[in-house]
Image 1 (spheres, rainbow, N blue to C red):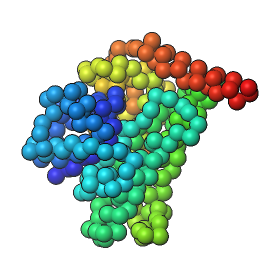
Image 2 (cartoon, rainbow, N blue to C red):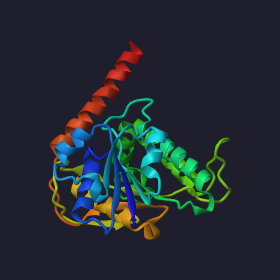
Image 3 (spheres, one colour):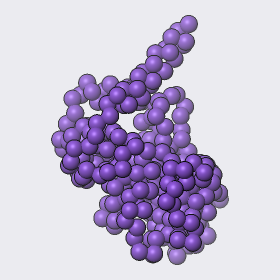
Image 4 (cartoon, rainbow, N blue to C red):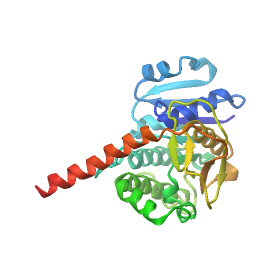
Length: 277
């Protein structure tokens, strides 16, 4: 019986994952959804079943290890869908969430001993951080994106370093030592290109790739379906970074993306001006 944990279910990525789960739930599904506001979640998903169906909604912060321990106990898959559409110095939401996950799992491993089973963490990343995909994008584009989203990518990279250490069994602290070489978790990274149509619910088709040339557009709906596949097949995808590309024709929402980029770039300019003043 699988148990899924979903973090960030009210965002565009988390909502797409939840919709994929609800559209094709595995038999005997158990799902814990951690959100800051259950009311906001149920407003977006009025069809969401009650706890008696195996779905439980908890309110709290994804960066709180004690709350995550309640969610992650017995979990087989953790969908880490938290993030922010900004790039500011010191941002650490993704890292803090990863640290809380690792802390919660470390405590459970110490308590359960040999009975502990490492879950897989499905982490959204980006094609820009996948060398096998980025080399097929014009270098000036990659350089510009990495400059504009430097702080966002630093946050994600720090989180991924935590997961990779934990997967090797190299993570420990004084209170909860990890046995050398005994994995605390497994991970898989999903690396999409630009994401479009955040409110769309129709999948147009996707493919998982190790690298190579790729389309520049992917819908959130297809991303959600891909993340769900990665979480359902941990033995096949564990400890890999895979690109997610469109095979159909997703709706392109460049204007929305432009607005996000404009806000990020203006923030860069404003910080530069104030630092020089």
